[in-house]
Image (cartoon, rainbow, N blue to C red; front, side, top):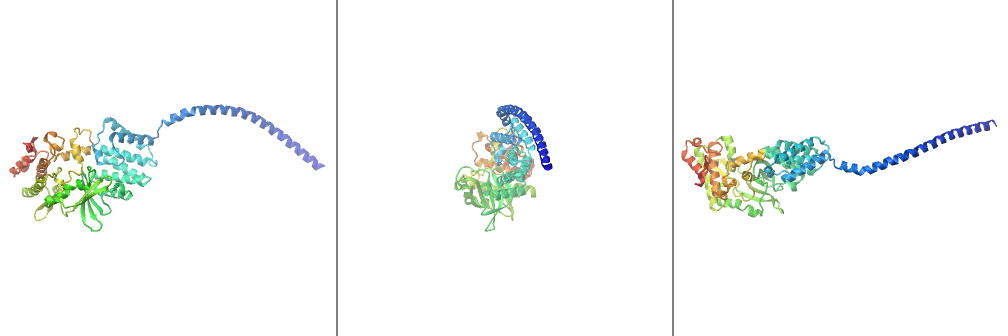
Length: 448
């Protein structure tokens, strides 16, 4: 009976606690109903405002989206692409576009390099500032893009663009390394020649038509020179390179022997290349001046006669060089200096970007690099190749003009922009001959 009494007492205690908790639960449920109603009202208000809020948020772009949109806008205006092209140097920018470029530069600084779109933005901005002539900034952007790239496509593009801007800065060893890596990553897109047959050894030079490489035949182990063109005119390889091969028959003594030609992209006839013999020990006229100084009159006459004979043989067959200058004259020291004229017969293969720059009426909008290229070309380009139409089409007389300027440069080591008689005081008759070819003090003597 005592145990039963204890159990009864415990049941009474449990009942008392249960009643207390139940009362609290009833009170909570009543309050919750009020809260639930309030929450429902607030939730309906939020849902009603959400579409407007989403629209407002949709109008706010991230820094990454903003810079990509800005770069697309700049590229569209200037007809640029993420892949750098030498033609981009012809781009002219007004003050509004320059302001946009400045904005893009600042935006990129606010983007974390770890952003998945960073490499894409850096490549695009690099292409734009490259066309503006800021090659150092473009170089830095492409290096950063390569380092942060998340795929081989971006890595290859970054390296090819580095090849372009480094070539323009004459940093040839690094430029070649970048090109070779781009080719390794994407041969189909970035090869500039037949990579299966020839391996590139070094860059010999670059200009308005293309880039010149020393290469080696993989099987024969013979050294050759490969000129890879930035652009080519429309036509088959046989048609475009016909004059270059014909020159070996017409004036083979005065030109390097042509070996092969073709297109990397045969279907589209793009990325043309021309292969010729490599002449061991021969250097171009500008390199000769840098290493040995100006030619003495006797040696200069020997060089001039060989150039003139090569020109005459070509002109008799209706073939014109149209880009004659010291850099296109190879000099090889044997018993006497032997001359080879390079790029003969290639005038119809590709447009000369330097001459296109020369024909533009306003230089003020061109990048500094483009202006430099223009002035260098103008020293040897006759008026008809600078867009002065009253002298007719470029022809044999154009080569005669360039011949006079070229020989003056080799004999004096001075700029041929103006011919000074005191520079050839010991050879006045030769000076008069050069004046008859070219110009003096603004008077066009070649067209008297």
